[in-house]
Length: 252
Image (cartoon, rainbow, N blue to C red):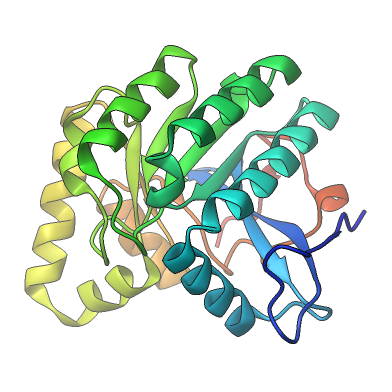
């Protein structure tokens, strides 16, 4: 099923439709790799074009229309959670949106009305600088409704690593770029290990993104990062192709 929508409010010049793709976040052990959740990815154009998507998000964060865009994604994600009670979805949202009281209210109302709030996790992105006090306040509102929040790309851009001390934040994700740097820079590797250890001591989850080779899989696992994501496990796919949470995957 390819669910798309025309974009009268903010269409990129050369892409007039958008849809949602999903990539698994996997839980790894020495013996198994299993689907833990799915991250949703906005896609635009036909075929999907990631460079146009980056341009769209950048422009939307500048002019404020990102709140409308994130609201559409949120509604689509909640609808899919309602359609398939066997999955959990992590949804990217801009700090601009997450600092908006209206966006939080709309998200809570949609998730509660569809009965999916316990299977929805919001990833706070790093590409725009949201108001810290508003973010803290709104994270607490989401926590009260059992809607989880994690910090995406925690070492990049405007990521709010300081929010990790909040009980409303479940954990964080290390980006492809952080994974690349830690392989060539000892300081980055030490920082990742230290933050991972801190998260584990404080009951926070840690995900390593951009896992593409068996060696990277083992590196992350040996550091204690048992939640991983990347092309080694699966490329983003359509909703109808998703396996239930807990499904086994090949061990790299």
